Length: 420
Ligand SMILES: O=C(O)C(=O)C[C@]1(C(=O)O)C=C[C@@H](O)C=C1
Image 1 (cartoon, rainbow, N blue to C red):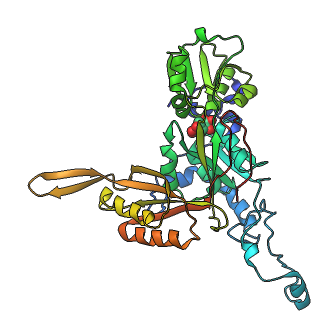
Image 2 (tube, rainbow, N blue to C red; image 1 turned 180 degrees about the vertical axis):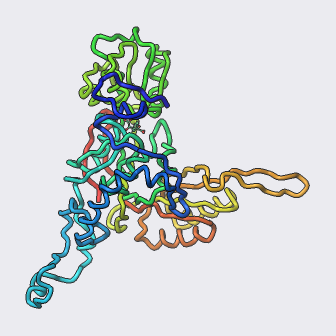
Image 3 (cartoon, protein in one colour; image 1 turned 135 degrees about the vertical axis):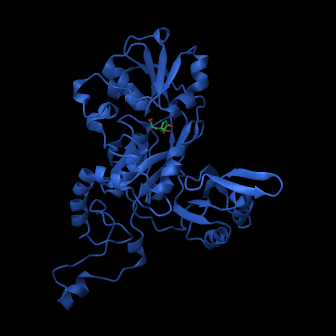
């Protein structure tokens, strides 16, 4: 994917790759080479993140003094209805009786958080769909732009952000594979999902006409979601992939590029002063991207509303156990909403000795499944107990409320609150 460089001197930082990011981003300063199996990290990753982590350590120390309930020990989660905690009077019985009470089940089910003050990491620059999805998931949150998906994961792990909101699949463009791989490599938990209608526009500098265009730039998903419409519009020009849709708009504006249009949101047009040449250019009016919300701690699964659970598993015998795993759900009437396979990066190839035929090579996969049940339900627990018998590796990525909000295809600004 191409990294576009702006001309503005204010954008210059250290390397060509980071120039475009300037004030907006948390940077990924190094590559990680940790393995999902043992969570180990390479020493060069640790040292290159030193500046980031030393800042974070002092923050962590002060935050650890705050009492934690349900895994939350974030000062921003002040509306969690926590049990009063009296540090000063613990020798005073009367005070203890009047001020402290035993934990009850309601204390363990925090009131829904509407996102106020939550720092939410997303990939892209302001105007990206991911920023809008973060706002839908956590209204009034403080969005934190990150230059890569990996950085959004790290921002939560390092307590720079409280949540990350990341795309995992689009109804037209399919899965965002990178995030599936990162879910496995990091230890964050899925705590919610949000389905966001994606309404694309073709943007260019004021005065530019479609006939002048020699290039259309966008996020690969943006290009994929508008492929047929671009052709129908007669735009058989070069298509170039960049890091995010709004970043494409920003690039055109910052560099006064007159032969290029961006596929991005109407909000990106407003932010970067571009004109909308075409509105609603996605190939399907109901174009929707599913995002997941990630946190350091899981939420407590419930049964009073529809929940979804995401798991990932592998087996040494490859795909031949897949039908057994699927039947564990089928027998319990648990619907699957998604199945995805990714290369098993730890063991990508398996050599199979087949007598008289030679040595066959099989690809090894990690299988990701989303199913419609809460981990608080016995049928889900039983299904996973059975799945465990057939698999060599199994991890629950999260059990979280399903996004049941209705949305209209014509509107890209549906907003509602349903997160925990
Ligand atoms: O580029 C953006 O605006 C994004 O938020 C990323 C992203 C994606 O990764 O799928 C999100 C939603 C749309 O599907 C297009 C792009």
